[in-house]
Every structure is written in C-alpha cells, then in structure tokens.
Image (cartoon, rainbow, N blue to C red; front, side, top):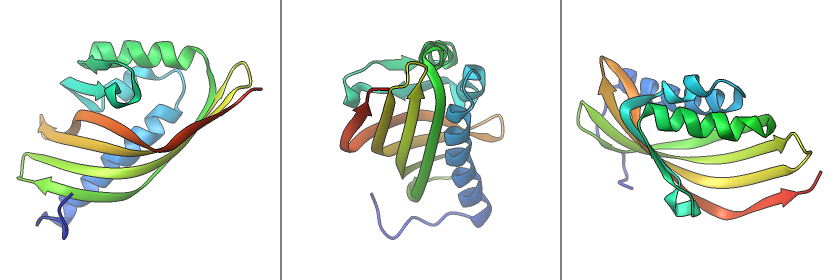
Length: 146
C-alpha cells in the first residue's frame, strides 16, 4: 500500500468508495447473485485462493458461486471501512478495505469474518467495476453452531 494515496480526483474517489459499499450491500442482498456479479467487469475475478477456495473468473462463474452460497444463507451483514487508495492511473485503480462480516446460515450457524479486501477496479463502459477482488483474513473466522 502506498501512503499517502496517489493523486485522484475527488469524484473518482467517491465513485470507488461507492463501489466498495455497493459490493457489501449486494452480498447482503441474499438471492441476488446477478446483482453481485454485475459489479464485476465481464472477465472479473473473485479470488478466494488465500482462503483455500477457488478463483471464479467471469460474471457467470461469480454469479453461480453466489447462487450456491446464498442457497444456505438466511442473512448477511458486511461492514467495509478504512478504504484506502493504493494506485490510480485514470482507467484503473487498486484499493483495500477492512471488512467485518457476519453470515447466518439457514441451519442457525453463525460465521464471523474479519478480513482485508483487495480491490483492483477498472472503468468498463464508463462505470467503475471490480476487475479482481481478493481477501486475506485478519483474524481466524469464528463459527458458532445454531
């Protein structure tokens, strides 16, 4: 991460922060996998390799992942903050955000995650979209049986 942040117009900074918030809200909108996938570029990557899971490439794969994930979820709550810009060149940007997320399964299991999200974003048809989203755990996930 580069500090201080690179020069970036204020309206772009707001758009990038809005994209991070849109991701959190879309993931909390259970059953709307297409809405999550739409935040990505057509060839976007949802990279969960650091969590021992797969990398999902393209909107169709991302949507399919979230459809499967949402099938077992009753509720989600994602809180993303500390959004920090690391790179910006006018057409692409990289930023990070800290996340605190809760997921309640239909079986009553609660999962709590504290992670650092890494967003690589790009302008796609005039709108900022996620080109790659990865994360690393800040603390081990906590799961409690329902």
